[in-house]
Length: 274
Image (cartoon, rainbow, N blue to C red):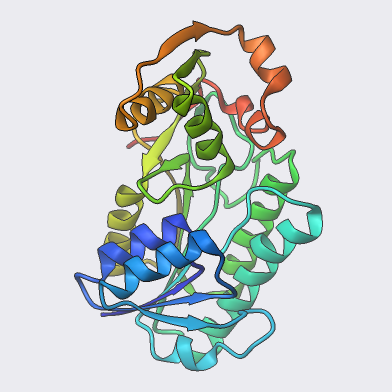
């Protein structure tokens, strides 16, 4: 099996590392920063091939033609509208059109996100109908999904909750790390549906083997977990003694970074696990 993974982020690193045991893996990246250099070195040790390419500005036909599975993990959770639209709409649109033209036998897997629905959430019967995107992130993710559907490729769209893993370096986890390093664990009580990056990798391999015509689903663990647990896990890993300090949700909402505040609407939501 030949896997093409677009994007070199923390999820892609977990996925590529896992899939390297089951076939040939190629990972693309636009540029390297200190964090991505760590990812790149870890993957090279696993025999993963890395290719520098901008999927929007350069030709990716050759890479797509040679793959059995095209896995789009390019995405942004924060930034201005142009940044989010480029990553969450334009990239999946081009990738899907390239797959449809150059390699229609391939399976495309796309990592999307939650689209605004809260409470007890099940996938909508008609794709992207009845969902309630309100943030730019949610709207662009929904547009990206529609573009893949309209391209007519064999595709599986995953909508994960909060993804965690050993390579995690997103703002949410950096914030948690800073608190844990100081021995401070805020007892906020927020409940989030989450999933490990390793589980995402296993799901991706499974759907590639299934070769669906078109499917979309939420990818989370069955029960949400208190966000406090992530702070505690980091403190233990750092061997730091910590103090748990209760913080009212209203206060947390006022002072948390904007990228984290946008997730608070999903507090307590449960996603279909059938």
